[in-house]
Length: 385
Image 1 (spheres, helix red, strand yellow):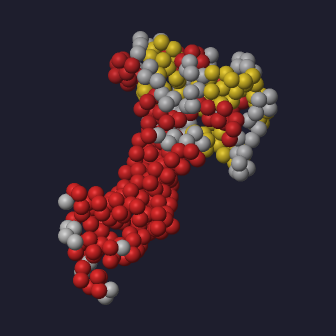
Image 2: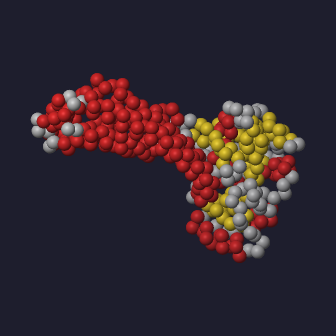
């Protein structure tokens, strides 16, 4: 039976040259499904990575209890001083998070550009911040530095340019990177200057470097101190929450679109394989008459369908990688109501998922034609009936 299967399969695969165009229907159709699926999931993957990769185990945010983000949190000067003196807290940066209405470069649409006021400790707490052009801003001035992705996405966010904000002009004196993390989508300036310009006496959050083993003890101290109504939130937990809704929405959308396209690809595979079986009907009937069993016929047709589907999966996953891996885009972070720029991330896991989808589609599209090939009446086919 193995020998029969190998022989029929060899004939089938050699005959692909004569059925090149019809076979390409399967390859192209399944390739398109895989390419779309992998590309959309790479978008969600990149968005999630831009947030989660910014997290460090020894960093946390201090937010007001009940706040789900920095925008609706508040920390007074007195509260910041109390928290900074707690055992297990090594460094604190008082910060102010807000957004600015700035047009995007690609479509002139107004979007929310994240603006972060920081204290001097922000740079030692975040050692991944690296200036790549210009210089750091001077404290006590309206100078700011911009993340490279913010500069790429928003109009006017260029080195030595100015952005209007209320009663002042923000002078961009430098550009920075942060290992691809979310901070590259932000503009940073002196927290005290921005507080004055925005007329906000309180901070929105504290960024702290702390002893992770003391997270429970620190939260207990915050709960016990009646002057405080805040909580420590590790960066990994905070950014996982921030990315959950948007990345989840992108993922669901990707599977819906790919599923709709998959239906079309399956019908394309069915038509192609039925046509291939019909063309080779007399050949298959002759083999059956010579003693070839039905199972080798089924397996050989399935192998042909799976081989074409595998080719489509490889083409689709490969095209998604070449076209979109590292491609920069931006979307709204629903938790902070600000734009986040990120790079598509076509990972080996996503490419493997795409190829798995392709093989599954090939199996579904080839099964019925394979069964038809095995069940065709031998005598009638040989008579041409």
